[in-house]
Length: 160
Image (cartoon, rainbow, N blue to C red; front, top):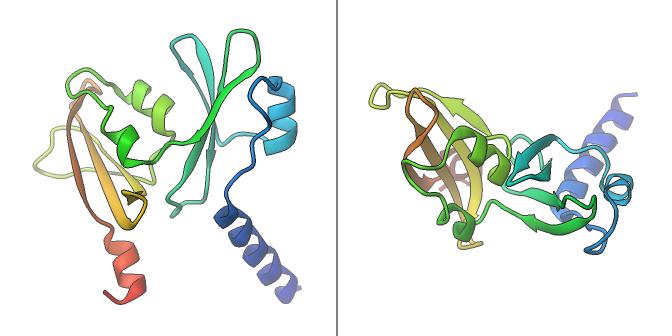
C-alpha cells in the first residue's frame, strides 16, 4: 500500500512537470473540461470565464484557459511569466484582477512594513531563474507594489 502511494505521488509530480496539453483554440468549454479536468479556480475577467490550472503548491506554472462569451476556448497559456507580471498596473489592479490573471497565490503573508496582504507567486524569471514575486495590496485590495526576488525555498533545496 505504501509503495502504491509513493508511485501515485511520483506519477502526479511527473505529470505536473510535463505541462498541460490544451484542446485547440475554438474547442467548447465542455471539451476543455474533458481534456484538462476540473480547474483549480474559476474567475471572471472582462466578461469572459478564466479557468485556472495550477501545477502544485510549490509549482512555478499556472495555466489559464480563457473561455469567451460563445463558450469556446479563446486562449490557453502559462501565466506565471515575467511578461505577464510586467502588465500589472500599480494602484489600479485589484485582488480580483490578479486572481483572474494569475490564479491563487502560492502563499499569502503579512509584513509589518505593508498595510495589507502580500501574495507570493513562484515562477521562472525570464524562464530561467527560480523567483518569487511579491504582490503587495493595501487594505482595500488594490496593488501598491511588486517586489521580485530569488525563491529561498528553491535555493535551499538546491543548496545555493
